[in-house]
Image 1 (cartoon, one colour):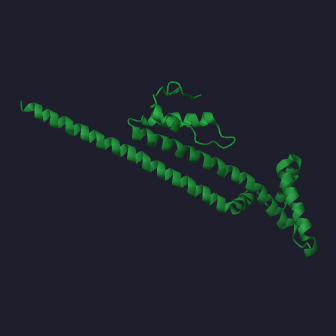
Image 2 (cartoon, rainbow, N blue to C red):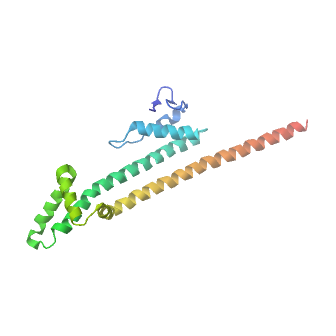
Image 3 (cartoon, rainbow, N blue to C red):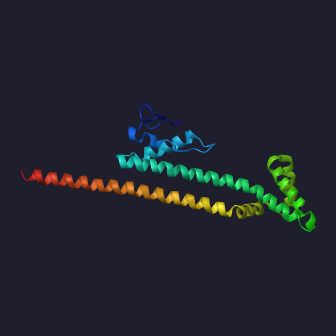
Length: 204
């Protein structure tokens, strides 16, 4: 388990001293209900321990990397939850295709309400759910068919989460490149300064 000591400014897992100015930046800005603070802190400690920020700007970049990485975890979790929710919609759609065929228009709404209720029972009642799934299989609707329907039901949200994940990943890569570029540049400057000093000393 990882944690953060606000009194010492250290990660309890990595023992990395955090400048007081940036301690607040390394705390989660907002956690959704059900999200784990321990998971956030573990992710944060891994990133900070890997980067080992060496300056103020690198601490700022590190805090951004933590937030972007947590956003990616969040988006993936929400995408999975969304697929689970949409599975009920897929069950309802499949039941409508079976039950509404040949229903007179006058009874169409009541039949739709019944299939909606059955789909809700599939989610909440294991016995009813098993019966519904057996019925769907008997009609030639297997798991692959349901998966396809889920993706159809969730296509817009799926694309939205995919775009959010890709955007956060791209920004994270750019930050990592910027940190690496800055460190290479500083190393070149230090080497150049060392060579100039050595050359100067060699003259005397």
